[in-house]
Image (cartoon, rainbow, N blue to C red; front, side, top):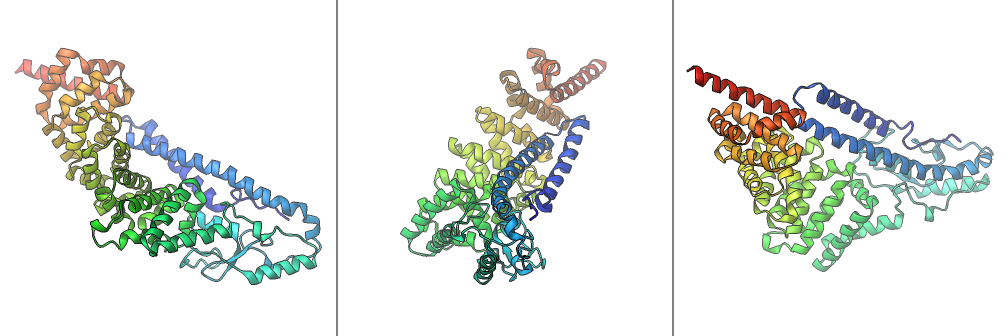
Length: 469
């Protein structure tokens, strides 16, 4: 029997990898060829490299499991030739005798590991009919299984015991039943809800396979969150239950194939926003982390931005809880990669809050990156001038040893100076006293040198014009 690999020859992950590599090539080309290094392009390229790496690692892991399963068939290949396998016993995807036949919502039957792999790759259609699936629950086809067992017995072929069979995600039927029973408890009494929520939080943290289960039904996430969505007032929210459910949502969002499903489930983003405002500090931090994870997809950045999530994120940043700062900053940064979200962040007070934190030397690395991103927005530049950004940024260049931070500072200053001529006096005084800009023009990164040299050239022109006048 021919060997059928999970990734080799499989068009789904291969196509995805090729698409990522092509986009990565374009990004790298633009980074190398552009005079002014695009920080956003570098960050996106880094994210894409990590995704390609994860795909490669997953390929090795899954290929090993499938090869182990196929070894059984190789050991019995001589027995297989005793009879031609009927077409109805073959999986339409693997073209091999099915071990665990299951029915999908269109009524077609497949071998569980192969149709599960198809679904886990983000597909929501039937491979044979191309119909959109109403759900992705897999139901065992007991009739076909019994017929296969009888045929194997007649031909002296042994198949793995279905009771001990696990799919490529490492799940058994008992695992699935337990999962469904936990979801059912979400519509039960409060003690049952709290117990089930705590267990789902732990399972989705420790077992990636349980995260994938939520992608098999459009109703799974609404069931999970039903205790929160049915709450009539903030006073009725049980903080411990909210924390467990929001953290479970974060765990689900880590699974790449869940990101689109989670964000597009109507109740999810509003509940995350509510959690940002009303939860414990851990709940609020995990809600921010979930928004950050979901915003890896550009389509999700649009949804989250339009939902009004930036305002509560900025408010939480302003409050300054150490536990939440990194998650909040990461979420704001990711969302502001999208141009329209930059405008929303500026409108919601991001510049004032970020400058206040930077002035206090809180999370300077992360917040300078956000400020540099916002500096392409004209209103943000105006606000930076109003809130004393020039003095703050110059002091960071003098005090901070991080080359990336100095680069971000001088890039922002360059943009401010082009927009507001009143800042040139402050820049000139700084240069005369500390030679801050000249030193950066000599010792900074290539981008920092260009920006610093640009500022110096303009300062010299102003001086010359003044003398001429």
